[in-house]
Amino acid sequence: MVSLLKNTLTLMITFYFILSSSLLHRATGTFSEDVSEAISMKRMEKTTHLHFFFHDIHSGKNPSAIKIAGTPDSGFFGDTYIIDNPLTEGQDGSSEVVGKAQGMYAFAAEKEVALLMVINYEFTLGEFNGSSISVLGRNPVMDDVREMPIVGGNGRFRYASGYALAHTAWFDPNTGDAIVEYNVYVKHY
Ligand SMILES: *[C@@H]1O[C@H](CO)[C@@H](O)[C@H](O)[C@H]1NC(C)=O
Figure (tube, helix red, strand yellow):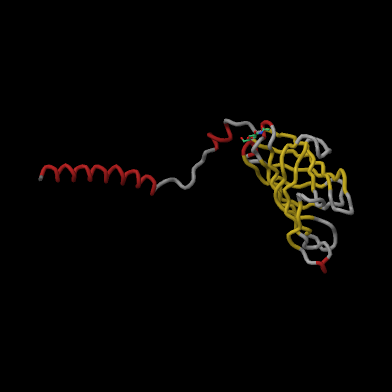
């Protein structure tokens, strides 16, 4: 009985030391460390050009852009839309789908037509399937070409930075439907 107790006690003490040393390690774990050797040195930065068409569809039974906020007496100012817009390889909506643009845009200028864009462009084709870029920028939609910053990304576009150039290829003033051509230059690893 005594030896059993002794053995149990020894076991408990041993476990205590094993556990406490690993707990201690966790408790004193490093909050930050320089991993530049491991991450940036082994991977070369590259720049990828993406070209696609963004379909902003307000009309019909299945609009991809819906208005979620806005007041009737302020004109466009404040109107906010949430979108899940298809991205295609060609201008024709029936061409191959390369991804989708999910996010929102809002009319954020009182005296002109300029949108605040907060949108993730997720790709579903080829080597960038499952990777996305995030755009946060100003979009003065009446301008021929608008430039918006890429503020980040994930998957293959982890650490992304760069810019997107948007040009309206087609617009229907009656419905608000638009097809916008994008040329994106994205730096990533
Ligand atoms: C993209 O990836 C998803 C999930 O891994 C897969 O189901 C799908 O078939 C892929 N699409 C293409 C076009 O490769």
